[in-house]
Length: 98
Image (cartoon, rainbow, N blue to C red):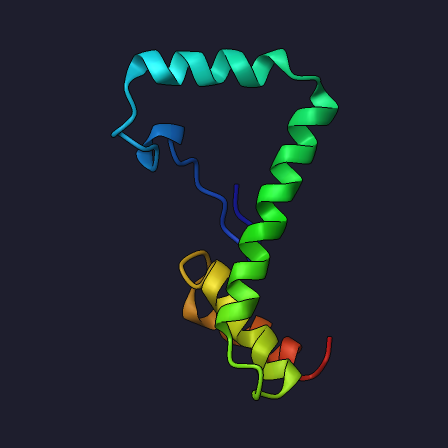
């Protein structure tokens, strides 16, 4: 699917999947996760996301202006997801406080 700004291409799930985990452990882990309630799985996912965001924020120098810290955060997360033109538009918006 394509629009004027973002292109969404299908990427097979296993393209970036870890390959050092045994099939037996993958099966065990999946069964364990699926035995949890939806709420528990969502809470785990949210907690992991929050931890990752905190790690990224802590790696960005605190003496940068806030807008520049936000630009750096954006680039750490999304630098490979947009074209240079798209990134420049987004970065300009961040720097303008949009």
